[in-house]
Image (cartoon, rainbow, N blue to C red; front, top):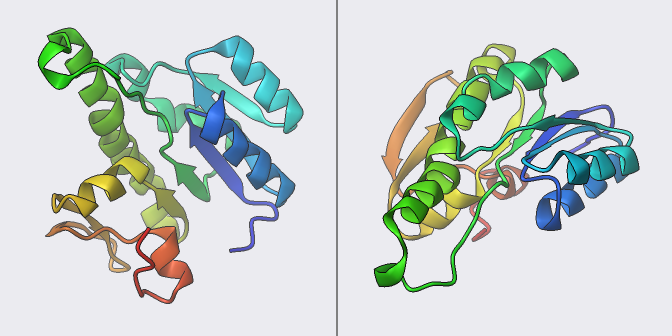
Amino acid sequence: MDLNGAHVVVTGGSTGIGAALADEFTERGARVLVVARSEEKLRTVAARNVGDYVVADLSDAGDVDGLVEKCLATLGHVDVWVNNAGIETSTSFASTPRDEIRTLARLNFEATLLLTRDVLDHLLPRNSGHVDVPPVRRARDAGMVMLDLRRDHHAEALPGRVPTTCDRAAGGRSQGC
C-alpha cells in the first residue's frame, strides 16, 4: 500500500508498538495523528514525526465518543485507522479486581469496536481506507464473531472472519495474521 500522503490515525501511539507504527508510517510518507492519554509522550512522538496528536483515555466513554470527529477536524480525512490502544494485566483472572476487568473490557474491546464503527461512517462513503483491528484479530483466532467490511457498504457479523490488511495484500487470501 502506498502511504505517501495518506492520513493515518494510531491509537495507543505514545509508546511502544504505537509509537513505532507512527514512525514507520511517517517514514513511508504519511501524515500521522497519534492518540493516547499522556500529552507529554504524545507531544514527543508527534514532534518526531512532524505530526498531530489528540489526548484521549479510551477507557473513558466520553473520550471515545467524538474521537473520530476530533481526528477528522485535524486531518480533514482518514485513510488508515489503527486501533492499537490496549492494556493487559499480569495478575491472575481470579484475583483481578472487577473495576480493572471493566477497564480492560472498555479499552481493549468496546473502544476498538466503537471507534471502528465511527470511522466507517467516514470511510465507507469514500469507498476507500483501511482499519486495523488487532484485538479483534486475536478474538477472531479464538473463534468469536467479527465484522466483515464488505465493498457493498455493509458491515456484517460473520463467525470468525474479519479482513485484515494482510488479507488485502494477499489478494484476499489469509496470511495467518
